[in-house]
Amino acid sequence: MAFKYDSNARYAKTHEWARIEGDLVVVGISDYAQDALSDVVFVELPAVGSTVSAGTAVAVVESVKAAEDVYSPVSGEVVAVNEKLADKPELVNADPYGEAWFFKVRPSNLSELDGLMDAAAYEAFLASQEH
Amino acid sequence: MAELRQTPLYERHVAMGGRMVPFAGYALPVQYPTGPLAEHHAVRQAAGLFDIDHMGQFRIVGRDAGVFLQYVQPRDIEAMEVWEAEYSFFCYADGTFVDDIFLYRLPDAWFVVVNAANREKDLFWLDTLAVGFDCDIVDVSDPTCMFALQGPKAQAILQKLTDVDLSQVKFHTAAQGLVAGIETLIGATGYTGEYGYELFFPAEHAVAMWESLLEAGRDEGLLACGLAARDSLRFEACLPLYGHEISAEVEPVGARLAWVCDWDKGPWVGREAVLRTKLEGPKQVLVGLEMVDRGVPREHYPVAAEGRIIGHVTTGMKSPTLDRFLAMAYVPPAYSAIGTEVEVIIRDQPKKARVVPRPFYKPAYRQG
Image (cartoon, rainbow over all chains, first blue to last red; front, side):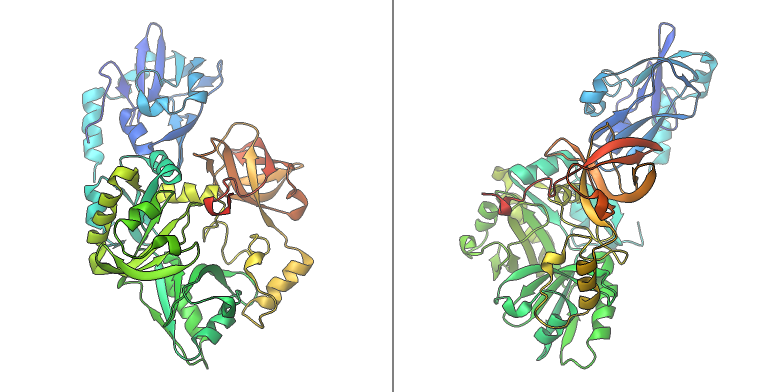
């Protein structure tokens, strides 16, 4: 199955993407992740103003069958969350790199992004995970 | 998944893009590419086809077959007509559940449908009880394939493939006849809250039956459905699932299934314990919960009230039909009245919920 990738984003092994926009980092989950979850019915987001650390669970995305943690790929302060996902969680399935961004972080250490994969590396990573 | 059993449809499921998961020792599709919500809605609005060949079937035959069944389950089967089909269960002597079952009275045998995960356990249990009865319990699960065709269009779809007049096969009755040229037991039952059929036929015809049904339903909105939709559909109708709402930890009164029991028919295994619970009241009862705060209640999440844990969720989800966050949960009777406020602990956070009537979705056969 061919998944979509945003070439401007970097990816975590836990299937979040992070994209620099101005002085903020926007975070969401990958096309692979939404497909693996299937129909998303609920998203729980961090509080605006909260401080998050890279690699820690800060949000939850729930499908019909399961609840999965979403890990922040970067450390910093959450400055915005996507309120639209409260009423339209299905956007996560429809537009994972666009309308269904999860939250925006003012990063405290941008070099954390260097530890993430670019789109090509993430695609190769997914291929290596197939069994 | 090499160690998992496969149904005869396995290759077809994979070819259809079914996402195969382990369930009760079998590799079964949890969903097809259509997705669990579309599959759920198809059953409510049109029809869905389920491979449920993992379910077990026993034929109970012999001079004492009826007497034996009267003894091992709580329903008065002498009140059942030939071709009638009813829900029931097996209890241990302490009243807890061995399994829940569907029971068909056929002209030449009693036919019992059991849960896949309990097949060996049930057979051992029945064999243990059968000492002294002139009857045989024959496990026909392997040679018998089982599908469910469910939804408002199920009758129209199945009628295209059979000469059996389905308008005469009333809810909770059965008929025998050819479906797509295959000798089939047609049971007008299901596990979705919709009208529909459970079909039993020789396993070697599984692929032909599957293809015939999908073809017959092509213009009726029929979708192949996976385990996720099967679970969300039965959940909305508050039909219990073994291992969740019922188990060897709970008994019929608390599970709100005492209506199955015929108290006047004579002794049956578990009667004394279940009757005592009915008179004294159960410690925990199954209730419906609706979330007041936002959150998805899931199985095993604790239910709390007045600062302490009082019970747990057995099944919970966002109801696809009703668009509400709902759960079934065991709580003490003191917290079971409609409107009672409790909390569901979701990821260590207490979230408000309240007790609401069951079922969440009124089954089609109980409407009008």
